[in-house]
Image (cartoon, rainbow over all chains, first blue to last red; front, side, top):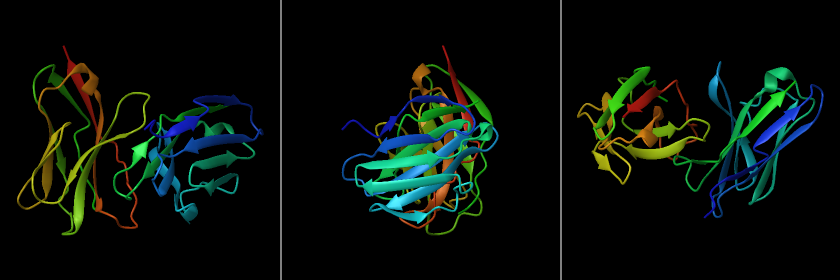
Length: 112
Length: 111
């Protein structure tokens, strides 16, 4: 298995632009998680899905952030409009059980 | 989920065993101890987890004290590639709780 796949690996954009991060979970996993990691706040859970349904989005910082999972093999995290404070590494993880999560390589986002 | 306490950093000589401690004195009876690690610029990687018995897999061993208030992750023969931040997490397995990553222990394996 290729593991969790994320794209792009790096994204540089300007403030106000829309950013879309993509994730392909491991086949057969029914849980998908989006995390954000910064030096100041560490690794934080933003949202997670079970069977393509959002279960807990309490970690989503504000309405500028949205996440979708249209099918079992694809999810997106969108930021619109982006701000410099959104600069971080965004990780996607998937799990067949909620305890053992497998993380992707991350997307490093820089908002100028 | 119970809170964990880990040393900020540790050093280990290459080829020697690395013993990473974790205190979780408020752990509940149904909470497991999980270990993940994060190598620089990569996503976190699951290592091992356990409830009260010692556990071993191809990556590491987990030793949990009898009162379950602390545990030790053991990397039997550390290599330079084991240099990473190691996170000890306590949670109820299969629960609606989420993985809460603290600051972890920065392990530096030196030649």
